[in-house]
Image 1 (spheres, rainbow, N blue to C red):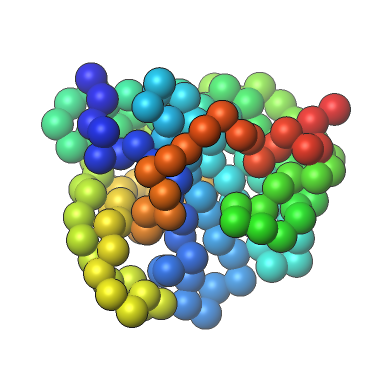
Image 2: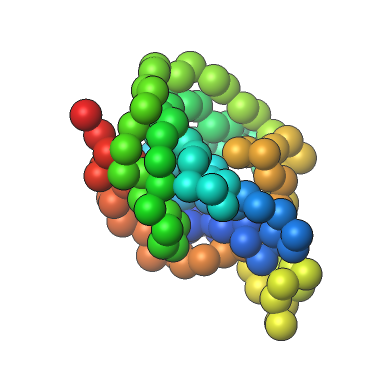
Length: 143
């Protein structure tokens, strides 16, 4: 069961007031995606995942692979050098809400995703775009 309201690239930057790190969550319509985390110093991580909706207002995220390394700035940044990578079997099941909200760094209300449990150290994301493709922020640094 999918909720098309979840599909898109979600970004924490409108909520990152005074924070030196940002997170992204990409949920594709086919049930795949990725999450990423980066700090201002150029380090971060990216994880591949699958997602589903087991119940109303509940999302299940299954990680399959994670890498850590150096980032190149951008929206979202690209992982250009992988220092470590490993299979990941983390499973997260959490409640969610998609609604209009005005984050601290936004001038107007925007579509936002609120999670009960954190993904990449964040519980609040703003919709960056619904048009997600199969690009991957780890593709440049893949060994």
